[in-house]
View: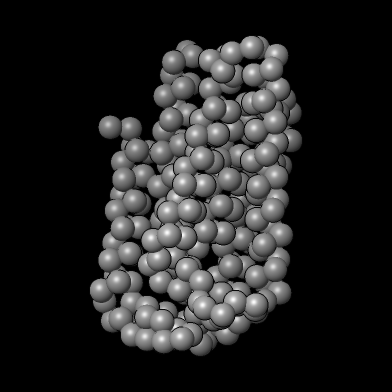
Length: 218
């Protein structure tokens, strides 16, 4: 088995383990409206330590829009190729792989809106009931999109220096998005960890697929 697919499986197992822990271990009603969360001492202790900082929440929302914009750029590229080449089979395979990855993100977003693992540690402005918060969908969005763009950058940029710059920017945006969301206080610690485990699983699986595509073209 490709080592990247193995890493993806391990990370997915850690994600599932996190779900089990927040549903079964040290569960207590410490959230708004007496909502329950597992690993309550860890989660509540961390939340009480950092507090709530809505400016970080708004800043990470803006980065989320940038991530979506990056995804849209590749969607447009794929659409242009489809129009010019008159066949979906002739669209760059890596762009199709990106599209498949982003569809998976969308499906997971809808899934975890419907299957509520736990709710936010705070009641958001304008809301009357706590919102679902596991995993941090914003973390998944930012890490997977910026991470996948960094992976394919070398295939669509001619200048190596420009490629390195874009990759470094993507890494910085990933880190800022995760840390900003973590310290904003709108998620439990385990929401962020779950989002990271899921993101790493998706990125490793995507990277493994890219390797297979490159092997076929050699």
